[in-house]
Amino acid sequence: MSLSPRRLGRAALFLLAVAGLAVAAPVRAQDPPAELSLPDLNGFVTNRLRVALSIAGADSMQAGTIDLEFDPAVVTPLPLTLVPGSLGQALPGIWGASLPAAGVFRIAFSTPDVTGFVGSGTLCTFDVDLIAAGTSPLVFRSILLERTPNIQLPATGQDGSITAAPLAVDAATWGRVKRLFGAPR
Image 1 (spheres, rainbow, N blue to C red):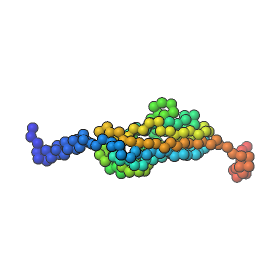
Image 2 (image 1 turned 30 degrees about the vertical axis):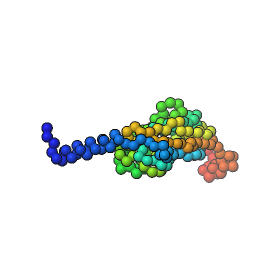
Image 3 (image 1 turned 30 degrees about the horizontal axis):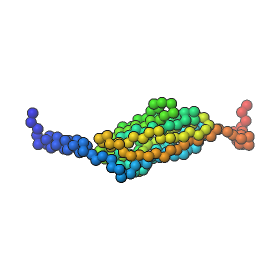
Image 4 (image 1 turned 180 degrees about the vertical axis):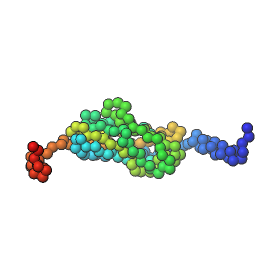
């Protein structure tokens, strides 16, 4: 089988790209860590809140797995509401979220974009349902960020929390509501 000059050129470019991935520089001690952070949010029981997972200092990040701990008696994260951020990507990534254990919310992602995620901004958002009154910590249980080929990037996490207040209506407010809409019969 002979290769045309055009196919030979494409094959050479492919081999150069693979070779470039194979000799990627290891993480140096002076590489600053990516900083992930979660907000402190407040809402009422039965509300749904959107949580933004922010990142600062992303540098060629191409994959990651982030486990967050929460109090399942207070909140329920909704994996199907995960919305990825872009952070300078030209190609869409593959994202997923799950609840692998009680009180653990896992976010996993990978991108085919060779530049990876670069910069600062919202890494992703997800929703939580507030199911009972109380405060649930949102704690980084583990953070694994990588660039190709399997080079771990340093990362730190700033925890957040979600406070769910009980639904309560005082007598004066209930009286105004009844006057406005009429008393139930």
